[in-house]
Image (tube, rainbow, N blue to C red; front, side):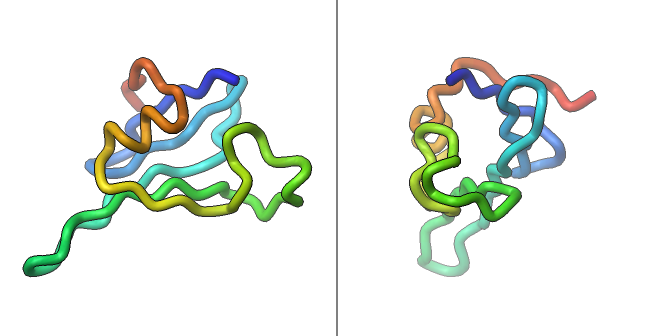
Length: 81
């Protein structure tokens, strides 16, 4: 499956699959010494068997944008404009 990320705002992306946004990729800045996190979350509660690859859970946490994009197999980011 090929995903495209569309930048919606600073630190916020739509995860597009075949022309439909199916998930979000959102940055949560770190507080104090805590590290920042990136979250990928399906927008709709979907039975596990019907979730697109690589989603086996509804939400995933990553330590960087690059790690999240790599997990999704994203090669490029589209402008939301």
